[in-house]
Figure 1 (cartoon, rainbow, N blue to C red):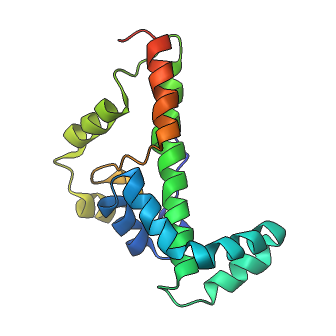
Figure 2 (tube, rainbow, N blue to C red):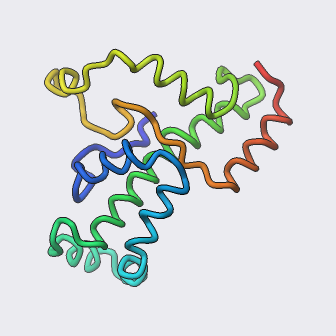
Length: 159
């Protein structure tokens, strides 16, 4: 599972960590994104036209600027989607799947496994900092994700 971003991939890792740890539902994440959309959406269009110029622009903005915040929210979401949700979904929907249960079970299992981890000690030992490395995992599934998951769980026998 190499689909994760390390701390260096974010403009403000502390803010991304706050998003990950505190906005635990899709609704909370969406509300935070909405706060910054008016400024982020036009920047995103510029990014699609000229990525290099848009990245240069974003790096000149103050740390708490709405565009920078939105960028880090999007990066955190992409990390969650690729590293946690899509990898679980693909594994769970495979004909011969090692994954069990639904995504809520997957999140709960991760909390059990990771409950005694001392993250700061792990980082001192040289482990890379990335959002899913420590702490609880958010559940940022959209209603569409949940509907797709429900169909898949009916089609794939329970383990």
